[in-house]
Amino acid sequence: MNQQGGKPTGHEDDWWGQLYGDAEDAGPSAAPDSLDDRYASAAGAVNQRPDTVPAPRSDPDAPGRGAPAFPAGLPRPPGFTVEPQPQPQPQPQPQPQPQPQPDPEREPSPPAAEGSPARAPEYVGAGPPTYDPEPTALPEADPDDLGDLVADTVLDGARYGTATLRAVSLRGDSARYRGEPRRDSLLTARFGTGEHALLLVAMATGARATPGAHRAAAEACRWIGRAVGRSHERLARDMRAGRRGDLKSGLHRLTGRSLGRLRASAVEQGVDPEEYAATLRCLLLPADPECRTRVFFGAGAGGLFRLRDGEWQDIEPRVTDAAGEPVVGFGSPPAETPDGDRLTMDLGIPTPPSPYEPAPGPPREPFRFRASVARPGDTLLLCTNGLADPLRGEPELAAHLLRRWSGSGPPGLADFLADTQVRVKGYADDRTAAAVWEA
Image (cartoon, rainbow, N blue to C red):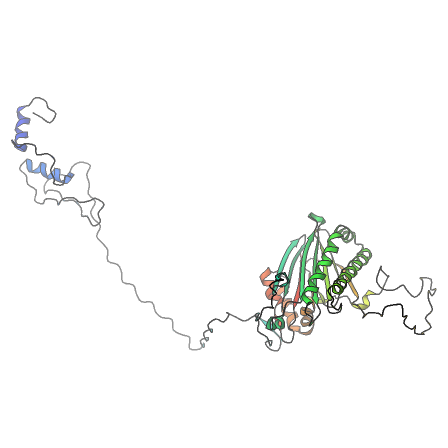
């Protein structure tokens, strides 16, 4: 019989008998069954023994398996090819790298001490300042009044129209060393939307050596911020129209009202109004790109500088600049009319104080005001005395900021902070500054 169960034929029966004989089927063999094994078995059936017998094939995925061997003299099955096993190539030995030789003409720099910064903050002047460049002590905190705490540094910025604003307030070296709070306060606010918006930058400095100086400065900023915010629409219209007189009288009234509320708050707290006082300096910027009017106003000393055409200009309004047309709540009426008629006659006789009138208080800071039109490329700098004094007293600081801020566009917040905290020996007060770059 054949494998398909058909009728036997002589030739096929002879071949089948020679291959299997009369052996009974013993079932599947345990020997490996692969294409190589079957080919070797067929070769032996025709009395041609191969010279080499392939070893049983293992798992085809096993690593290191060699190429299968075929009997000598026999053709390989059609369509079956065996690629030669690639021989491993010897890996080249790595060559040792030559060690760099030190330059005999250059002295090696000493290693930095463990825990020390990469470089100390920059300073200008005759020598390094007395105090450490970084904060040393924190102010004492009240567990029931944690809102009274003041951060060491405040940084802010914005861009509206043609103006880019950078503002910073940082604690002075002396306060950082003694663990005192920052007496300077900074407020940046935007009132309104779109081109009708108005930007306010307010900075205040509390009285020196008083326990509530930082609270008085913060309260002064809040009062003026509230007053300007409620009148921002009219102020913005006056700035766009260039009504300088209306701006001066209106801002003088708002400033006096805000500082008056500060004195009233001191009376409510049972504190001397002269101790619970603050200087106040403000800057108004319109968001309208067509309006380049910049208005400064306030009461108290500080600095107002302008960087134009490669040089610093000190444009701080002086007390004598307040002379002119009287405004509501400020100054006194003129001594004569425009026609020359005297309104009063001063005979030089001192008037004794009246027992029914309170004693006059100490003289208050005069109101300061300046409205100017910015040019493309200008940089306007408003600051407290902490930065104004070293700018006026140390030419190297002014030259340093001139190099940093001339022709390079507005710096980023981090760069602006680094520029404004350049230290000068002998000047250790808080610093608060706001700079405006004009495009």
